[in-house]
Image 1 (tube, rainbow, N blue to C red):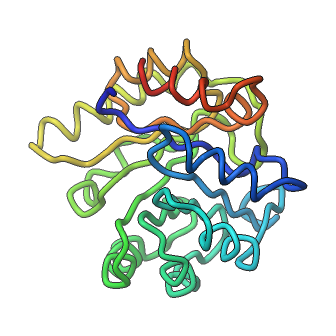
Image 2: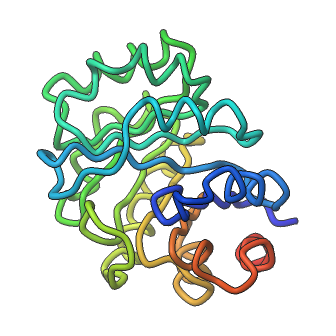
Length: 217
């Protein structure tokens, strides 16, 4: 297996057969399960809340990568930690006191990640990059699945990798949106460490094989 990580996105799962979908993830080469929480305010959509995440967390054997696309995500650090989450993602655009939020996440026992929307430049991370465990770059506008990949995400990934490497840091780069075998290969070449894939995995004829193919890029 390659060193990069694959995090299938729960948002694209079939919620009428959620237990089977999680079973598939457990049996696959997936490294994490990516969970997108949307509030209809920060992004123009609503996904699911803590009752669903608690049910998923009870049966998922992969680390949970929880991405809060919500206003005031710092209010829910304790609840996300209670799920047994490995990583908590908060948006740069949603956090007035980002440094405080990052350390509150770490104090709760989780890894801390900061997410950037497509229009948000990586330069804004200069003063926080050394404090976070991962940066999530959105390669589509957040809120909906099955969107077209934004090409600028490749150069953005490379710029962020240069920022991290030049400082001798080990911060991971995760990319979410429009990931498939073609875009995934290019993102990894640009310096990505973690690929989030939704429809490409869950809507494929053989999701386990699709995850394996992403893992072998």
